[in-house]
Image 1 (cartoon, chains in turn red, green):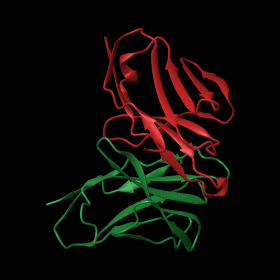
Image 2 (spheres, rainbow over the protein chains, first blue to last red):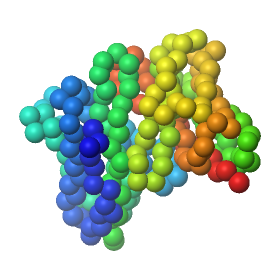
Image 3 (cartoon, rainbow over the protein chains, first blue to last red):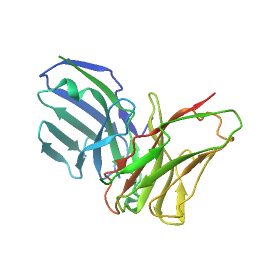
Image 4 (cartoon, each protein chain N blue to C red):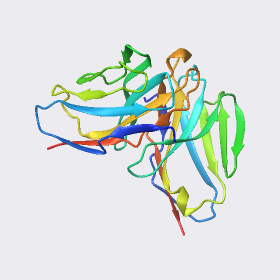
Amino acid sequence: QKEVEQDPGPLSVPEGAIVSLNCTYSNSAFQYFMWYRQYSRKGPELLMYTYSSGNKEDGRFTAQVDKSSKYISLFIRDSQPSDSATYLCAMSVPPSNTGKLIFGQGTTLQVKP
Amino acid sequence: DGGITQSPKYLFRKEGQNVTLSCEQNLNHDAMYWYRQDPGQGLRLIYYSQIVNDFQKGDIAEGYSVSREKKESFPLTVTSAQKNPTAFYLCASSIEGFYGYTFGSGTRLTVV
């Protein structure tokens, strides 16, 4: 079993839809949780950065962490064709002073006009 | 503008050759990382360095080597011992205590 599981999709939605992307993990020692967006043939860019359980909102994006269930989510409201990309979840690998991350395999999202 | 520059963007390697991928950052970040990305497998850590003249192996270091002689630079050499080097290679950096990496635009390596 992988430490981080992420459904690779692809996920196809119409423009304006609410998108839900999810990751589950097995190691309760993971402390920091991130979502990255990666356009084709580009490097990932940081979208959301969270530490504690709960919700964090930034514009159309909401990151949700449930440490008790070992489950994180990214919601995208009013999805746009420009949101079409691969979304990677990532988690900090203990011990925390190494800076190492473990990544999910990514979910490919297509938003159709 | 601050950022990470990876070069070249595309690289072709013949069987038995060593090749070096360049990674330079002007963000004044202490930590730098190399990841490999294969279709359907996400990112896997090759090497990382938290300070100059020091680096550690990641999960898939076999067949790779690195150096960190300057804070700004963290080149990756793919040696002939790496049996399946065709992949997309990503360099990243971060400040101490923050896990939000800044990534470069990647180098796509193909064995011909």
